[in-house]
Length: 358
Image 1 (cartoon, rainbow, N blue to C red):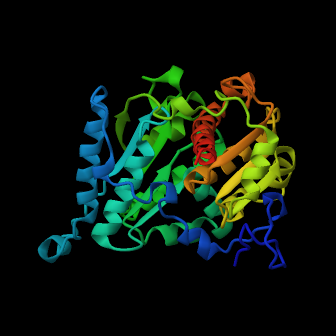
Image 2 (cartoon, rainbow, N blue to C red):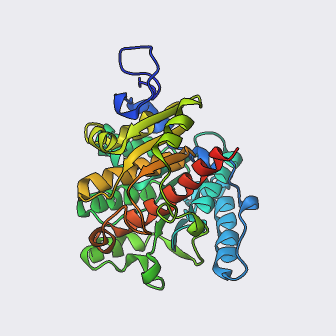
């Protein structure tokens, strides 16, 4: 069971604030939600536009089409089955910068396998969603649940938490041993292009063991969202944001500080349910975030907003291309998350501005 984002707990009265929502999510829903997000519902290999200036994009597209066919191929039968010949299970890993289409390609792979094999053939989620699933179900039940899939896709594979990295490495090894195909993506920072994604010194031993499972596919290119970086544009007037929220069904309005405080009381696995029924988010008092734990919760919320294509309207004092997160954060161990959040929040903010012009 879960409480929708437009309904406060214990009441049928619609709310206009995310901070008023106390979502509760069942484990069945956690499993059911492991599908490509709404933002990529129509993503297919045929709709991916490879940039001719970056040949690696077309090469990756072609390889993933082959991988989809391999995963969807029937299991060995007859003599091959009697001889114990197992299906060759592909595992691919896409590495590249922000906004080069890796998630489009990953969701296209999930859609292709599902359409070829049938519903439930592919599981799709972010790294954080899988770690949350393990926390909710336990490790072995998670393995059993995911082992029924032909393909497990992990978007935004993260290496900034040693415990989570070990957990996911073990989970993926268990699944691969059971014949489940794997596909993953991660981001390379703009100033680190050309470095191998599995070169992080802190996790070298664990990462090397995991890397052996994957065929690494490089996806070069520029961030197609660069024109919509969230802090490039001046914040909107508070009155404009309030009026826009008041005039649109499914819109919510929150003070930035209040929302950040509320996120601390909601488990990140429930942030998706927090947005059920929400069509627009207005935030006032947007300011630079100075505490790491607060910033990380904000990143998770931005990811869920982006997954669901929920536009945002921002009013506040954060200005300049990097001011939402401190320079220290953008140089630290979680910098990939912060750069991703800036890119995604910028795209959602631009969508919100576009709504105001209609």
